[in-house]
Structures are given as structure tokens and as C-alpha cells.
Length: 394
Image (cartoon, rainbow, N blue to C red; front, side, top):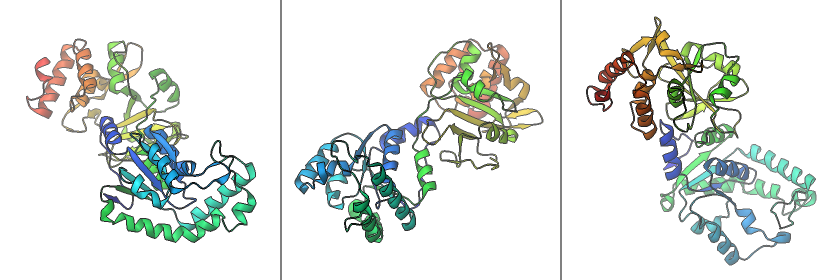
């Protein structure tokens, strides 16, 4: 697979996000010229995927800038790569037969020359100024003389090799010898953030109480949906919730941008692919999921779903002939919170037979009244005919 400009589709449901994470991105090599941001990117990716981070410079350099033999270096590298999964940060072309033997993905940070030059200069200046130890236990530090006034200057090396590195990785993209590798080429910060957001499956959802506090200034009607809506209807928590969902009218979506103005908001566009939700960008029909987190380094905490209304009726997105008075769709829980009515929530959950959806159905069934059961049964028949297994239970 060759992804020259990053456009990676991910699954429509969080379960499929996890499947992709586990089956595709396991052994990753991040490459690019000096100053491209390999280390920063690699550390973030390893934290997102919860896998080991291996820095090739740390494997290579010994104390006092000791230059090891290839035999020693290759042996240490092979030992590091015995792990089941890792993000490997670095080039060292001569190690390709070792590091790319079992790699599944190579991510090339291909930033413009001036961007990488600026970053290389800034990094060298700060390291020389702070005298930070580059790799623990080595005593290796950068200096102004070595970084700026030496023939071994990393900045000079970057200037000389930038074009050469680009040509080298261009050739690797089309080399049949590496056809087993997924190459992903990221050319700027936007590509990088887009890629990382679409690999981030980490959720630390707010509790319903925390959610109410966070959205206290939201000037539109909203209600809790998903598994939490089921539990709030029942009156007790029946299972662990991996996320928390709320729903609001599509026409009121900009109120979210106002109340969460300091958050990162990403919309699933197309469904299954996250992209930044720009200020004042209206999310039209066909799109409804918005993921929210406090910053790019934080886990997701809220999922917002948009719904459509016509003449006071809520519309089911998969079949708009299925509708219900909005006053009956949004109800108040025993704790006084506005929630999505359980029969409507179960209709949403009826598409898949995940364990948690089956558990939600079982826990809710005895609490539904006759009218709620009848409405859900009629809706299921309209969507699935008489084939859905819940129908006979209603």
C-alpha cells in the first residue's frame, strides 16, 4: 500500500478502530531528515498506541560520543526489535535489512526544506543552551561550537542531505522489495495531526456529572445518549462505559463550538475518518459524529451526535420515515437528567449485536412500558422486516 498523501480510512465504530489498531500498526518505523520531528512524532504515536518507543540514536551512541561497530549496533537493535510492537524512531539506512524485515508501516515525515532547517537550528540552539543530556547515562550533550561551527554540525549535515534523503525514500516507495510495507507520507503539521487523531482510540469519558458541569453554559437543549442513557433510565449503572454520548439538534451545532471553544473538536467526515471541525463550518446531513478532547495530547472525553427535526418530529437517520415527537424522544431520568428515550436508543443499537448492546437490551426490556415496546417493535420491523431477533422478545 502506498499512501503518498495521507488519507487513511478507519472504521465506522469504535470497535473497528480498536481492530485496526491491533492488526495494522504494530511495528512502525518513523523516518525523515534531521529536523523533521521524528522523535516528537514517534513519542506521541507510541503513547497513543500504548506500545514501546525505540530511539535509534539512543541505541547507537555510547558514552562520550562513542561510535560502535556495526556488529555491536546491529546486535543491540535486533534485541530492541524482539518486542511484539514498537515505534522505531530513526533512519540509519544500513539497518534496513534488520528493521524492515518485519515492519508493517513506515511513516515518512517529508516536511519542506525551510521548515526542517528552522527546526534543526532551533533544536541545536536550545540543546546547546540548556546542556541537556541527550541520552541518559551517555553524558552526550550538544555545544554551540559543534552544532554551528564544526564540519560535523548536524545543521550542515541536514542541509547537505535533505534532497538526498527525499530521493532515497521516493525510491523506496516504489521498490517491489518493500511491497509488504505500508508507506505513509506526511508533509506538514496538518497531515501529522490528522494522522495522529485517527490513530487515537484512547478515551477517558466524563461522567454524567462532569459532563453537566462542562456543558452548563450550553445555550441549547442537549441530552445524554448511548449506554449512559440506558443506565440513567434504569436508575443504576449496569456496566462500564468506554465513552459518553450526547445529542443536540443539527441546527444548534454552533453552540457546541461556543461552549467548548478551547477544546479540540473533530468531525467524522466522511463517516469513519476524523478531521478538524473548523469554526463556523456547518455539518450537513449525512454527518453527525463529533469527537471532543481538551488538547491534541489528551484522550477523547465527549462524543456529540447531531439529529434532525422536521415539524417537531425527531427523524431516524437511517430511515426518515421512522419518526417520533421530539417531546417523547427526550425524557427526564430518575436523577433529573435529560436523556434519549430507551426505545429510541435501542433502535440505534439494533444495527449491531455487540455484547454491550445485547446487555443494554436485556437490562432495558423489563423496564419498557407497553407503548415503548410497541414503538420499538414497529420500528425494527420497518428497518429489518421480521428478521431481527429482538422483535420476538417485544
